[in-house]
Image (cartoon, rainbow over all chains, first blue to last red):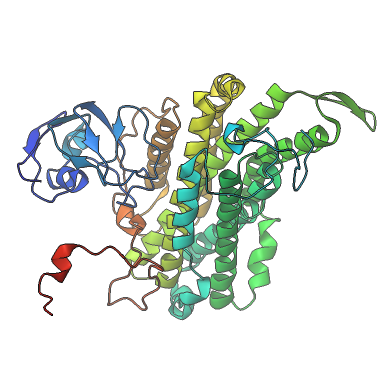
Length: 93
Length: 377
């Protein structure tokens, strides 16, 4: 990734660091994301994508339905809008 | 269609549905209707492990030091998991193989079920190492009402499918009188039994294992029963893959391209599918109550485990296209469990007892020009 990509979630906007997976970035910024295998076969981290699109270097084994992405193994080349919340905010609510 | 172990009718396997088409004849993988099943097979094979690789001798010492109520939690979970894998080690083969019609799915079912037999053998490995008389543990599985109640709910969908399949394969569709009882065998109903069975298996692998997993990892967080936890991590890794398998099968059934009637079946089973999830979640919460009847364990109690059950039930329902049923369960109450479930490299930390897992056949054979940059002739 040469330029950083902007990610918008329900609660904030942040930039993806170089060589950072989307899952790592969501965790770094305090979002509530689930994970298990971190390599695309379990599907635990799947999240709804509201705008933008992602690629997969290798097609993941996990089932992804329309409008969902796997942040553990996708590559991001354009700005995304994701339906994910911050962890603390959800806990407070 | 009548079952044959090698159906001699020339057919195009790519045109067969997953189930209820012509039984598979040539086990060929050069062409695949659904390559995902081949990928699942390869992944499962790369996961291969043997229980004996994990040293559980320290667990015996740990176990002897546990208070009685924690011994109850530990052993009860092993009993329950033994039950689950007793069912899973045979049932996909018995129920699905007579009906499957494409080779890659047939082989996935066999590979899947085989890996469950490794889990069963690993429970014997653990139990043999921590108690003097394993029979005391195993004998109780069919005598313990808390376990047996759940056994009935898990096996009944398999049993119903197997029962009707046997009549269908022998006599075909129609009303058949057998020893005074009339059985109405029709394809729609048979497909309903298949769909509900697959949903029930999905629930088993999506929810039922996880109460036990949580307890095993809660012990290991305290550096107790670590050999057991290491085995459970390997099992959890397999189960996550199996779950992906049933999610794919259910998704293919729902979208109707494979078999239009199956999409109708899926729609007609929506409410029952939701109820299977609801019932399983309720049972698992009751199981948690039974586990903690004499006292909770550090880091886990009935409330926390119940919230976790509701949380994962919601997630798993969404994954198979169902509306989640628990309103206030959008947050994982035990996020630390994920660190134990991270499973692609089950490579353990060096301070742990023994490295238990290594990837087999994972050498990367690709060479780039850069790799030869400093090479001179």
